[in-house]
Image (tube, rainbow, N blue to C red; front, side, top):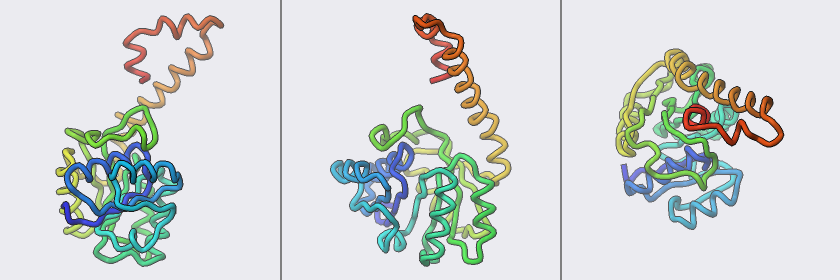
Length: 223
């Protein structure tokens, strides 16, 4: 794994943590792509990545593995760009989006899709951005891998080894099963948490006594 050439598109909490986890296990050829130049500068200063850019270029296209660590909308756009610009047939493209059906459907509808393995690490925090990323985020966390129509056996094997190398536990699901499960255990709880916070904001007195008296149970469920 340490000799692989890996690109990470999107240096937020998850993308930054992936880059740091890979760097920690000895991967040195990591290319970062992010529209935020400050995140790239920080990653370069920490020697987490070897190089950084604001857009996809030949360094990315020639990678062995490309992580797309953005929202679904941007991930679809990057997939189209990679396919249009001719990413290598042996390059494994993956993502970290928390829903899979749209992305897998998009890949399966493409005429010349890249070799794609959907991914979703079941890890994160309430923080966002590269400055809050850390190398141990994925340790002992389940990391879901979702095959597409363009997934080759070597790609699934490679992603399984990589997931294990960064300390996570690989689990293979199809896209619909993934979305059904994560909808119940991840997305609905986020909606409930946000609703509780908004409820307190609406009902609280001007002196903020509800927020002041909110104890551990409220904090645990809302983060």
